[in-house]
Amino acid sequence: MIGEGFAEELAAAQAGTEPAFARLWRDTNPALVRYLRVIAADVAEDVAAETWLRVLRGLKGFRGDEQAWRAWVFTICRHLVIDERRRFKGHPVQLSEIPLVRLAVVPDAADEAIEHFSTRSALAMVAALPPLQAEVILLRVVAGLETEAVAQLVGRSPGAVRVAAHRGLRRLAQIAAEAGVTL
Amino acid sequence: MTGSRVPDSDMPNLPWPGRRDASDQDAALAAMLSGTAVPEDLSASLRPAADVLAALRARPSGDELAGEAAVMADFRDRVGVSEPAQPTRRRRPSVLTPLLSAKAAAIGIAAAIGIAGVAGAAYAGALPSSAQRVAHEFIGAPAVHNAANLGAGGGTTTNGTRHRRHHHFRGCFAHHPYPHPSPSGSPSASPSPSPTTSASASPSPSPSPSCPPFPHPTGSPSPRPSHSPYPHPSGSPYPHPSGSPYPHRHFRHHHRRHHHGPFPHPSPSPSPSPSASPSASA
Image (tube, rainbow over all chains, first blue to last red; front, side, top):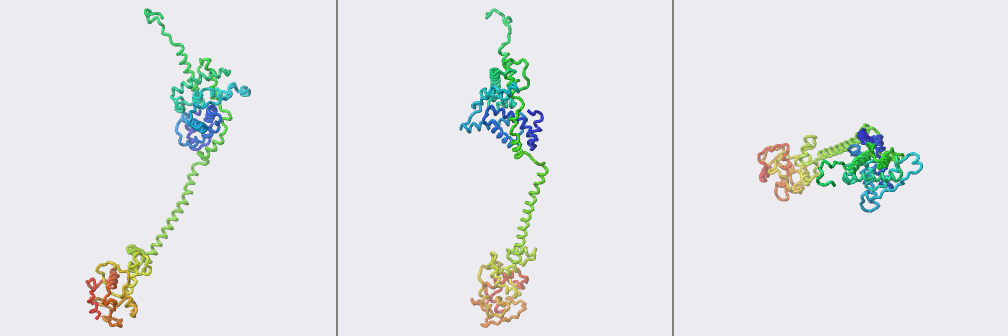
């Protein structure tokens, strides 16, 4: 998260300053890729690239703070994922209907040597959750969105989002404990 | 159960341990999700989840930052400005100026052609009478009657018949010193030339063969002698195929022709009487 300097960076990017937009991209794209690697791992890179194309189209017209910026970017991304799935399935689908990608829970030896617990392993554990819980946790933790923003994005009430997040965290703790992950 | 005889104060108001744990756990989970601070007294069952969330918030790896060059290229194409804004503003007039000058030049050329055409038409006498009058006043074009004479042969205007008629009486205007105003002032509707003119034209040696020597009907002073200087072979001074000594059309046209002539009529009578002419000629 950029924080207090976000408004200046956004204004500069909207005015056409490339370094300012690069800072926005470097701050947002990793979260976007992590989110996509869980909910649409097979098309993550393509959807991420298309998301930024859409963002560039509407960049000059965007108004809002950093929370709104992230909510906007992830909304575009989520709609693209739904469109992608609809194209293959032939009928409208809810993102929660999409089975999450099962990543390898156990990291390889090199990663284990470098890091006790890698981001890739964490994403694999999140992917093991039910779709709604996984998405809510990713949007709350990775994207940094508030409960209300997540509720608006996924089309649920804030209470339902809160319950799904808490249940997902408890389930995630169980998965991590079963995988032998300890601090 | 202690029964109903036990006072209420004997029952201790104990909190519900399960509910308190649940609320504490919810607060801990909310703190974990917001990432503000992990509670110190986090239960051991939730610690693995806290580790997973910390890994999710880890610094970006290299593959997550791949593709920056492509996105920046798109940014340059769609949003980015490669130059400062000032030269762009300068470029705008340089594009507009040739367009404006070309438009102005085209308008100027069109206006010049139009003015030249109108002026040419005015000097050729091809303008309508009102416009011809204006042209006469402002640019010295021929007056309406002169313009009519000038344009007689062309017949280019809508009143081409009148032009042809004036062609026949052009000589009359030149030699007749007393123009007579028309009583009605309306132009004749007859498009054909008067037979008088053709009849008198062939034998007469007059310098203006289309103009017979009309004496003034009122007998007013005339520079010509009362006798005809051009004796007619038949003896009649005014031969007319119809037998009338004063061709009606000829006379009417003749006088209408001089309605705006420079010579005021000496007599108050607006139209000559046919009977007056023989006496005057006699």
